[in-house]
Image: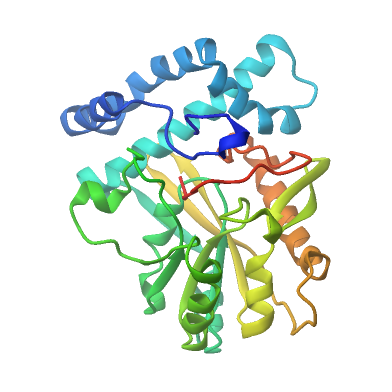
Length: 315
């Protein structure tokens, strides 16, 4: 969640928690494991839900769309549950790095389908969203036997750690910086041409608002990026939409929601690719309907004029 809300200076993805708070949870994990950290989390989230206007505001963007009839205490309760589940995901991410990947059971539905797409040798665009814990999803892709390149940018000074940072190992995927030349487009095209894998987030902009298009999401017009569909059109690589769901205290499920194949299309306008972005929005709405407290995009997707996004990464 963001530490700042000043749209004039750009939207930031840094954690609202302080460094000592993060360190406290890491210590709780080392001493008492996941359950000890969860126990503390209930009280910390209650504090933020009650006394942090910024936390309520960020959670409210989604809560007000997903639960439009909720008011007062009921809306506060929905926000509390959303932030609580997000906190559990952050703890789980740290647990994987501190205590090891065997701390969780991860199941993948669609393994054979992914292998068939891999064998087409057109490359593959894995599109996920701020649903569940995407790091868990990355951990089950080794069977593809292809390097994974991830479009991501972690903001300078962010104190959130990825699981591999906790474990003291090298990043298991190769990073493409969206703030680089042409937003990393040429690098992604090169990777796909070699039959390899690119992973992107489909629900939040990484850079210029010019790469966004409108879609219908939860009953209103939302803004999502369309660059991935343009790259799919140019490369012939299929887009595999997949989501991760926390299915139990120590288990996750990774599911392929749908596969989008974008034909070679003329033009670069957002309207050309909006129908494919809408397919993603429909898949995202389906999972948010089924699992309302596992969608963690705290950015206002429904802003009439999307704010300039400063340096975003994947939570």
